[in-house]
Length: 596
Image (cartoon, rainbow, N blue to C red; front, side):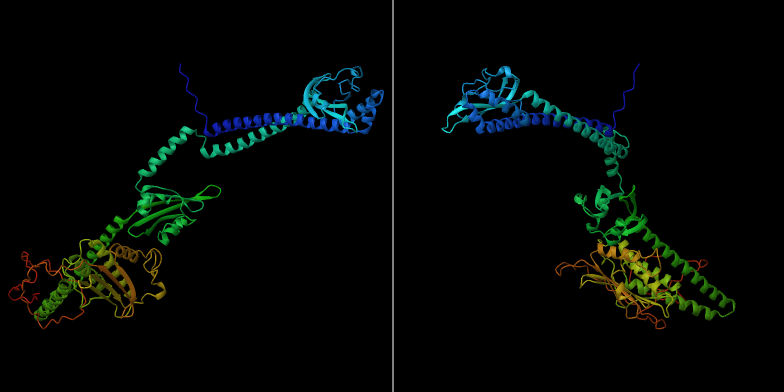
């Protein structure tokens, strides 16, 4: 039968046992050291006391006088006993220079030879020693008694027995043991309290379990792709995983640094330092869109903050493209609605028998739509920007805002560098036009003016969007590109922040000024590659025969771009034949189509 192995003691229990043993060893060591020290000190005190007593007796004139008398014992015995009891020593023996005792605590020892060394004292020097005498081992001192001529006429020995010294030490040891026991009990109680708290914090786990949990924790921390940041109670980075360092652009030495000194955007820093939880907040860094969630760690007091970061850059870009597609869809819907209205008008004119007026109405609409579309296509050779402008024009027209492409707008196909993604162009120009249309909406003669020009001489791509709305106050121009800035209420204000991020990625500039129309003008300048050197051969331009535009359809310098009129579905359309750009196309006989 196999018995289950006992579970290892918890870390707190192990530490408690170790600390109790350590405290006991320390207390025992201190007690032994104190005992040895006290005994040595007691012997030294006894030696000093004996020396002082012997020296005092040797210097007494009565002792010198008695030593010269015929019967020194009769005079000195009472004196020595009285002095012994008063001085607290075990014996005071006064003797002749040859060692014959004149006094002794035990009267029967008087007249016998002193047990000890007296050579040093006979030579005139005070001498101390530990020696076995009649009363037992003792610490004693022998001092000489000099007459007026400096001769040694007697000797004085005073001493304290080792037994008396041990008795004093035993009294001190008893007190010491009491103090050691109290220290051990106090140390054990303190250790128990500390380890009880440690047991709560470690949840009763042992060292192996804690080590395993740490290994799993490290593996899980660095395996997740999302960013994880932990701040301590002093708002310093306590822990950060690889994903968070990548998303925030931080190095490995960031642990221990205050979060306010990491150089992050002010709004993101504020979210990390906030004492309130944040849920799915969108924040921008130099090149990323992050979704931030924070939650304070609370356990009786604020202990820090845990923040998770999710990268939404690609999702935001796809969302922007989806918004653009929705815009194009809305533009097509608007065009279909306008085309249906015009088609109903033509049909009604034909039913009323006014065929000539119906032909004139349809021809004028087709010529105007074709001319305006050709204006955008000829000025903007970049297909993404051309499609964006046509779609935004339809949206602006539906909202009662006139979108105008300035006469100096010109971008030939291929001038936009491949390093500048079309996605960023759509983000920059699309958001600027949306904001301008929204700002100009509701104002009399609402108008948005767009300039797109590739200036190869200056090496820059110029994008400018101006409106005749209320404009941006000078005090708000520094904050207008920050996340959350909007005059339309909460939950808005991400578009301009994305514009600033895209411009920053392209190492361009974004300026906000007052427009000539009275509103705001946003000007973006993006760098273009330097033009090819003169010695590099370029393809020979092919002359294109110009086709005059009918005088009945004037082309203004700043033409609003409405939606194109689609062909009716019930009219058969011949198969599309690809026509080279710039090649004249002959219209069918009897048609009033304008050839561009």
